[in-house]
Length: 557
Image 1 (cartoon, rainbow, N blue to C red):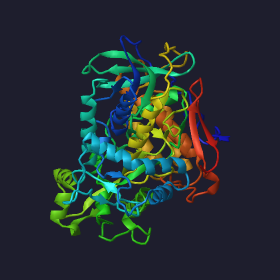
Image 2: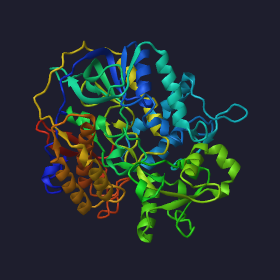
Image 3: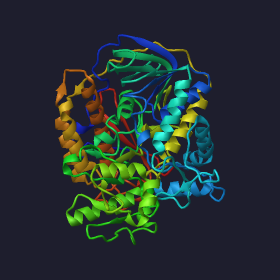
Image 4: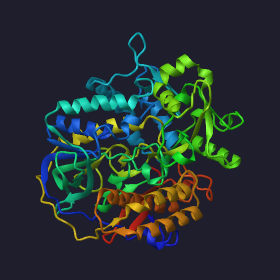
């Protein structure tokens, strides 16, 4: 085990960070056996499986139940549903994409249990695209060597999955939903076990102001942290709340340096390059669309045997190289040869969004550029979704189950949420200890001013985005340190969100500075090759004073 030295980043980026958010004391409480935080595929499936285990459930969600990342998923769900495909082949494709850092046992769980979880989703009411004979339509995406992607509405899979799960949750009287609620901090008992969460309801939910959900177990399914960057495919609610909460609670997070940049976000011009960007699904390349430069020349041919369907880190790097060489801020995705009839049927949502922006993919190439898309790292969990804090579980993008390694394989994300939510439900069917009385820890509590949000996002994109180096990471850390000093005495949602972003950004920077190699979606200009001595994981945490530590643990898993 080695620990990040103080010389690799400015000392101040390692701490102090808040161990609690400054907030009023809870003015109301509700109670349940299980509190699920998040309402995407992972959170709603966890709630339904907890109910199947006989537990009462409260689901806390930041805005409305349908406003998370799941509904934006265009591509589909990867699962072995073709008799000519095998779990072993899906496992191999996943391991290759993960570049030596996947946990093979976690991947084996994913590919063997995944098909039944998809069938369960169909039983919940999800309607996937089918051939006239009733068989599921299966397609390919980057990194896959077989057709194993199920999709709905052509390119609206996430919306259909969310619709089906939303309906199932609404039908269950044992699930209570609290919307418009920003989770603040984890409550723990005297023994350190999770005992619920504090939260702030934004005035449109069933309660108002700061309150608490008391629970015998807490499941974090808060999604990603894409808003830490200036340009992302993630919705505005994806501010790393779960990872930041877990760090403040003393949990271990791992592999935060591996942030996948989707190669093809719709480029809408420099004035629109802050915040959520529309996604142009990888499925379009799976159906034969080409990436071209400004001269119309394909540039992926010869760079990888799968060309445009290479793993996302390979494609994002290639696009970035082309943009840097040409001095441009985008390339093009050319789908014109696929024909108007096919594009209208297969990608109606993408065509509608492009046309809204004045671009017609039927007659012209689509301008695209990489954008922060998916965090492969997150809270360390075991194969049952248990984190390092007793009673605290995690699933979906907020978790690091070991499935994704250094780079997530396309369409494995929704599948991971389905599979590990089911495993958490099975674990919750066991003995749960009685509800503990929460103990408020004597730790530093403060917030960063929301005025720093744009500066943080732009600094992270410049120095810790697709291309990184020791110099760029140090410069970004210095910027973050200056922003951190802009503290606020006003505990309100905007400041809480930015404090979460700052905490996550600091942990990501520290891990990226320590990993002196290029692997998967972590690209170091000053260390351009993978290094077998780095086939290990980086665990981050906060000590009692709020100082950030990053430990290099173990060898290849």
